[in-house]
Length: 341
Image (cartoon, rainbow, N blue to C red; front, side, top):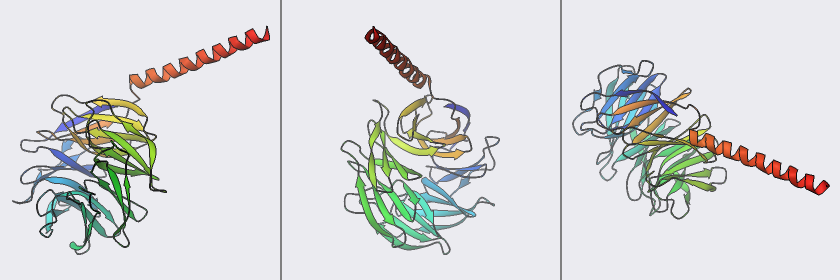
């Protein structure tokens, strides 16, 4: 991995938390008061308009999602709010304020004309919203002890939400009935699952713990697949996760930030350590052969990453195994030669 290019935002455009992309236009949500959305032309790596500043009381974007012609921003407020933005004009259409007691929108997902908002609460809650009317139509509360919905992913008419507890886990929701139908907890020590991402028949969950790590779930059986990946000392707090072109990328909420790349069997391939001032890696979006990530710093930043080749350390590992295999073959040949005598 390598940084191909980067873009620092302007004054007061701080703490990038979330990303959404349509073709080559990137939208970055900021944890500011009031919240702001920055629009970026990825081809030129430049801002394509002034940031969209939301209204007073519309603070702290922690999730973005594009559905159709609109961008939806989830606000980390009490009560929670969701802002609807028209993409073509880059202007706010309206704001949905949730009822009192439905707080801190931390994630968004969409399926079949509905928007789902995950709330960071004890236990976690998921709000269902009709996109045609932009009205709240339902609320699902997870089981006792299943707290803090930071991240959600949808596959085969089911929604999967992280469980940020000790140990961490994943909740399974049937979207047709909007009811929880399953719950999976990881192994002891695999705590505070926060980001989740689905690739094919597998779900990957990152641990916001010290040190961090990643678990893998077979969605056909809804069972954890061993072994999990556990990172090294000081490689803490997996804040973002994406699977792209066969690789798993984990962004760490550390100072400075760090990105770890693994294969889909969770074998570690290489690591990219960022510079001082490039703090937590809060979100990824894939772009052809590249990946865009946002940095929780002041000012906020986005980085454009090229996958490159596995790091030198991985190359040394491969060379070691090849050399060991050659030695084993040589020993076998010597043994057979002595036996024939």
